[in-house]
Length: 336
Image 1 (cartoon, rainbow, N blue to C red):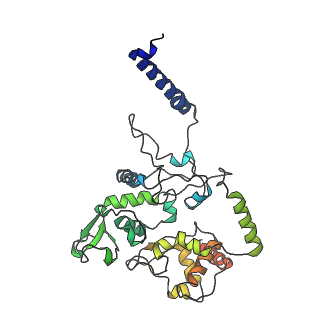
Image 2: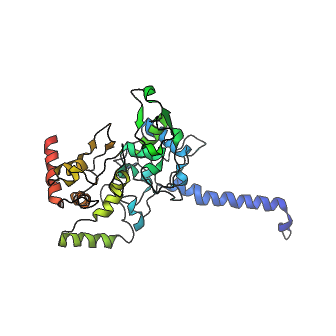
Image 3: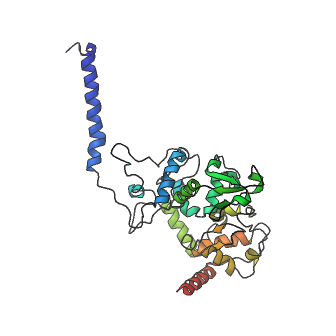
């Protein structure tokens, strides 16, 4: 017994016994005791295309720079409407087979923004494709590498009717005479990114973001008393600037400019409000703008429209939430 420290066989067996025992106690037993996680009612499984995109997302190692976890701290409110819960990962955590667990998408570093809700923040396909080809086309300060191998260069006469041509600005083309066409891999990856929307909770849901509960209550109270609109500058920066750019100049061939726009400066803001609510499709001149009716409140749309109508040389009257409410109701009546 006193020679235990000299008995190599006993030392190895003891270390193995302790390791196995701790593994069972810490990992295996709790796993069996945990209640089975179920998907949220509003969640839908990935389509075949989205699943292929998920595999490309993993293969290109996007998880090394992007997380998919909204923590319950106030600073993470920018990435989701609530903290993440286990059910959010129901369709991405299933085992690949008996021997392999599904790849983790939680991530551990945010060199780039969290992607939990990117399908809602950036729902347009053109934006994602441009961003994949060369991120600097839509985000000038981006340090993300481009993925040109997910695209093909073709002469205009070689483009097939079903090819997805990307409106890349001439300054970013290696061969200005050629067109950039998205491969199926690029389209699959974008389909997966567009599917990333934080599902809504029913009932009371989970706790709110730490340190933001009192702040939110105070903001609501202040809004009720003063009638002030939300911060239109911040809303524009988080919702619109990625496409229309921070200076409102847009992106030639992809996203129209707002500076000097006749629609933005119109005395009657109805057309501008309808575009924000319903989206806009002016292909092939510009890319498709997704609708924001289900993403933004009347107050938020009024704040964004007011910001656009009063900046970059634009000079048009402010927009009220009541005006947005009237047009939203008008659109709903037309659809019924």
